[in-house]
Structure formats: C-alpha cells, structure tokens
Image (tube, rainbow, N blue to C red; front, side):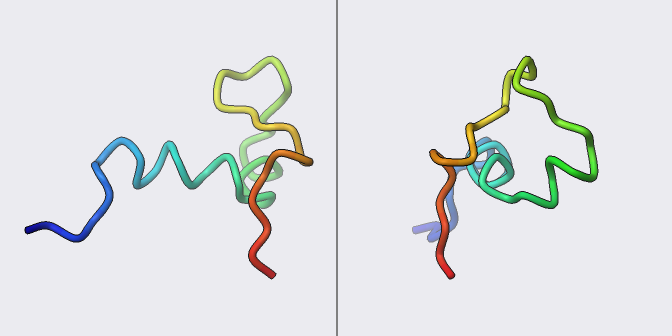
Length: 44
C-alpha cells in the first residue's frame, strides 16, 4: 500500500495553500490554480 497522495494532489493540492508560491510565480486571481486567501489552509 502506498501511503502517499496521488501524484496530481501531491503538488496541485498543496501549492494553492502556500503564500510564497503566489509571490514566487506571481499567481493572480485569473490563474486556474488561484485560491482566495480566506479559502487557503492555515496550519500555524
């Protein structure tokens, strides 16, 4: 049994929740993977 997430979700599921990703790649609301700040997960 593989305990890892499916390949697509390892990246596509996590990146939209990382603020630094938006800054590094200038992700804008018009981009397909954009997630509004209030919808992003916050662990800390």
